[in-house]
Amino acid sequence: MTDHYDALETRDPSLREAALMQALPAQIAAAQRTAALRDRLSGIDANAVTSRSALAALPVTRKHELLERQQAQRATDPFGGFSAIGWRALRGLAGARRVFQSPGPIYEPEGHAPDYWRMARAMFAAGFRAGDLIHNSFSYHLTPAGSMMETGAHAVGCTVFPGGVGNTELQLQAMAELRPDAYAGTPSFLRIVLEKAAETGTLLPAMKKALVSGEAYPPSLRDWLRERGVEAFQAYATADLGLVAYETAAREGLVLDEGVIVEIVRPGTPDPVPEGEVGELVVTVLNPDYPLLRFGTGDLSATLPGRCPTGRTNLRIKGWMGRADQTAKVRGMFVHPSQVAEVVRRHPEIGRARLVVEGEMANDRMTLRAEVSSAIEGLAESVAQSLRDVTKLRGEVVLVAPGSLVNDGKVIEDARRHE
Picture 1 (tube, rainbow, N blue to C red):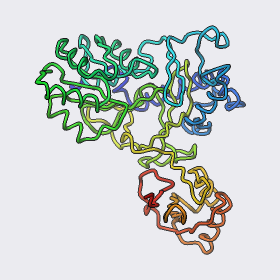
Picture 2 (picture 1 turned 45 degrees about the vertical axis):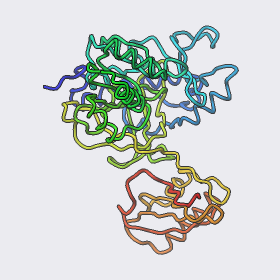
Picture 3 (picture 1 turned 90 degrees about the vertical axis):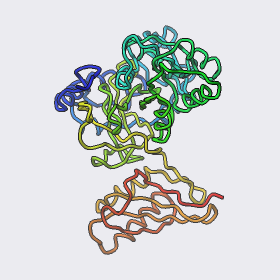
């Protein structure tokens, strides 16, 4: 029988959905009390948002918007009004245990809740157990990654060695002498450590498991680590949201965390895509300290059908499938996915569409490939006019049958030669 972190992981999906929707009003009310979201959610009755359709009607906050607001308010509020916690000098807010800085820079608060980033669930799925010694090679400075892993490990009942980044020889020495049961960090650094161990003849017989994150984790690297005795599982987490999804022993996609509501939307829009279609991951996290609603991660993914063979019943996603920000510069002007979405919105006959940019940088040409169920006289010309109106650029329109476009989440394909 498969071991699970708690009973939440195996509950009936209808019970989970009911619990998530029941928790939504309080989360929206918390967001409405923050300076950043008060205006954006003006007129919204928090108590009425108890369904996915009602949630989908709320605006998406994308990472660049969070950064821009933080930059504009550096002198008064480094969180840009998104955080409900802080310290005395920050409008009298209290409750922040730590403050972190991610590239941008973007500042993130950490509250006092146990396992604030909810990483314990991913660690348990990776085989971490109470009493294990964990070698944590994520950064303890500036970014929250080290704290995310450490607080999760403590929630499981593990002991942590705070290795941090770099100092490969010293970290390898600590591993050899302390004999940790597991590793937490990037997969690339784990490979560096194991290669150094082989080079120096250092034995690490106790380290059999790992939780990796922060970068791509291809199957080839997974197999390389396995050949050296380490079963490494990946977690998808961000500094803004904490854990979003995690890998299990089934190795079939990533199971969603129990504390998030995930939508997959068409890039550049707030609109959810049909099940199984690739789109941008948008996450609502049930955290009143940092109440991000419909936060656009900028990452592409898609849902997987069925349930995880380990018995976990939550929705699964395919993992990271690229970036949703597909902005392209065409003949000196930026073209955004939201503009393609606007063209589609003007013509309900269109299903999916993809703008292909070809040629060389000084001789660009655009072609909008649009899926339609049946040819309508004059539609291509009408869509071409809309494309020109919205983008201020001329482009061709090619109407194709439904299902003709690749399901990879791309709204703008830059096929130009950049030599």
